Each structure stands twice: as C-alpha cells, then as structure tokens.
Figure 1 (cartoon, rainbow, N blue to C red):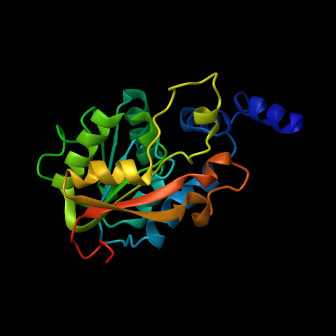
Figure 2: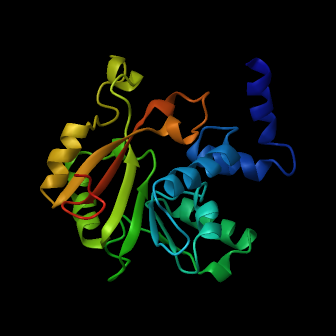
Length: 232
C-alpha cells in the first residue's frame, strides 16, 4: 500500500504522467482512469446504448467516460454538462487532444442540468455517474423535471447512489455530508414528474473496479411511466 501511495505521488511530477494525474485528481480515485473509462461505456452499452443514440452526460467532468462515449457514438451523439468551468475547459482540451472534434461533441458549463443551454434538444440516454448523492430533494426535483422534458419517450436515465450502509451515513463524524437516496424516495419523486424507477443491481455488476468501495452503489433506471422502456 505504501508503494502504491508513493507511486501516485510521483505521478504528479514525472513528465508524461503529470497530466494524467491532474485529470484523475479532478474526479478520483487515482490509478483507475482507464478502467473507469471502460466501465462507463460498458454499463451504458449493457443497458442498450447504441452508436445511433444521443447521450446527455451530467457531471461529465474532464471526460473520463466522455471520450469513450464520443468515440462510440455517431457524430453529434454526445453532449456533456458540468457545473465547473475548469473541468469543462479540460474536457474541451481532451476532445482536441484525442482529435475528436470531427464527432461534433457538445460540452457546456451549466447550473441548470442543461436546460438553459440545450434549447429543444432531446436524448435517448441521460447518464449521471456518482453525483446524485450531492443533490437534495429540490435539486433532484429539477433534475427529474429536466429529464421528463428532454428524455425521449423510450429513453433511459441511468444513475447510481450510495449504498445504504455507506460509511458517510453510518459515521457520526460526517452527518449530513451527502444525501441518502433510496429506491422508494426516488420512485416517489420521479412519479411526481411522470417517471418510473427500477433497480438495476449494483455498479460492480458492470465491472466497476473491485478494489473500490463504491462498487456496491445501487444503479437505477428512470423512464417515462408507461413507456416501452418501463417494465411491466
């Protein structure tokens, strides 16, 4: 473990690794960049994403998953939003570095889940990876309202939350640091916006790195109530 920590520390200074260290530090954890990039695409494809679909990536950051999505999707298929201008600038630099401008991805700074920037755009998929536990009930209501308007009739919103036994909820030293969302609470809120929720196991089922504790995060699918994507 000590050797691993020392290696991570050196990466901040070794030429050629400094930039990777900077990217990883934006989203964490260190040392799993390529594995997590593959995980993002694997999870979405396992749940039906195909090259001809359109994807809205909420909290896209420096495109840890975004680069894989841009490569996979047809031209104009990828849209990423993030509240942090530094991360969005980095995302745009990543697009240029990987010579993907020809795929015409869109990346925006947004504090409105894209509503103020995306005009009449709609999407086959909306992806929110490891960010829902930052949103309280009011923010989740805005997110579901946006989803109701922008998700295509047979589209899917996919996102994960902390497991019920996550240490932030059990450790008294960190009360209220994150928001606990359950299947029941998400279902109640989603129903208010004409949406339905179902469980899809845990993100570890999609080869999220086994060494990381967040692999037990439950994954949820949100669809329009009564759509073909809604079970039963």
